[in-house]
Image (cartoon, rainbow, N blue to C red; front, side, top):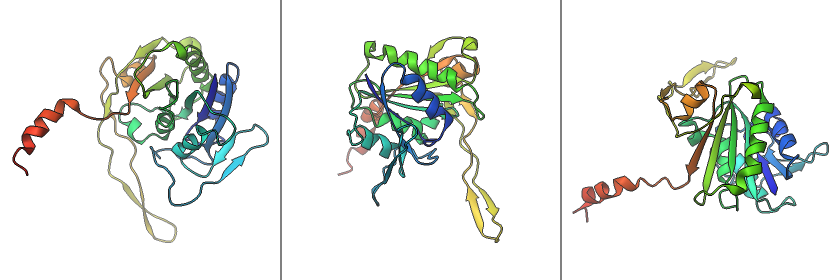
Length: 250
């Protein structure tokens, strides 16, 4: 198996290093990651300028001055020497639960590998100050070793969140749906040292749908959460209502 590894925390993040080390034990790997933290970049592509690449001599990682999606978009093409079978993105510093997947560069990087032969994986460590990257790395390794046996619809992405605990304290695995967060707070205006008003985007809202069966519930109770995501966002149940509403429009 050939694995393309990427992330949104940047090429120097400890989670990326832990993931690459673990997966190199079971597969051929290539790392293509942003040259800096690009959290929240979602599925953005860089279209208005060229993207530069740099290969790091100490570990062979490739970094790009672009987005997580740029990294995988270029990496899966074989541009840097490997045509992968699967994309694994992470290990993210912080959870990607519920509505987070809309904004997450970690999830977006995995999504860009959706056309490959094996379902891509996004893996995140659910803590604001993560300590147990080795736990998430071991779980990622176990999943990748078994993923060829998994039958899922084409273009499915596995979004995995891991409690920030020693491996021995993980209670098990839950297959989950996405929960939901409340709306984020208002952006905060601050004055810089020269008196210019600048703005901080507010953090994510609190979980409001964290019932049993959700990713929030699994993490809160010490379980790994695995949520299958699909790219097709069509609301099929709403198509008939929309058709009736549009009758007589033209």
